[in-house]
Amino acid sequence: MNLIDALNWRYATKRMNGKQVPQAQLDRILEAVRLAPSSYGLQPYSVLVIEDQALRERISPVAFGQPQITESSHLLVFAAWEPVEEAHVDDLIELTAETRDLPAEALTAYAGAIKETVNGFASDQDKFQWAAKQAYLALGTALAAAAMEGIDASPMEGFDPAALDDLLGLRERNLRSVALMALGYRDSEADRYADLAKVRWPREKLFIQIPPA
Image (cartoon, one colour):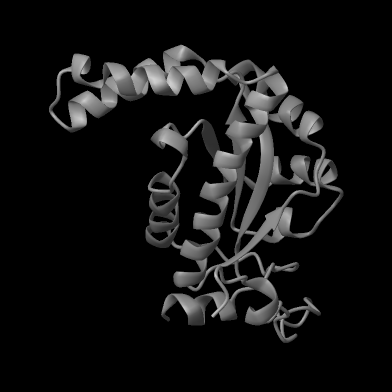
């Protein structure tokens, strides 16, 4: 499938059949997440990849019993860093210098610009929301990548973040969960949404051309 065909095929799958996603396809989806864009390329989030069935059954009540949690092959948890600190910027600068064969001193101005942004938020919550937005860029990339692989995916905000953080010990890792994504294969017989026509705003309502044509 090309990208448009894949996006027309995908939908937020509500019921899955428990079939396992092959490792090679999972790896390509995760690599797409790794390559996702983010502000300054900082990627201030982590992605937990949960396959263990017993753990997903423990997560299910925290996600209000939504069946995708236990019927999927894998559950991805997108979790923003909290706090985002100057040390994270230093790590990025070190990696950039190594990857591009540059002296770290050549990136001093770039490091300063990132640290100014990181330290410039009015509150810790504002900083967290910025990090969470970056995680959503990765989530969107993951959804498109899964569709290209012919793998069903369901993005999910319907869960108790604080309870999930406690269950997974995320605060000890300086993380807070922001979104879930279940990966697997649709159960077309059980999912009443499987064969419904996709509903999206028409182009003339969604897009505003400036200046008008």
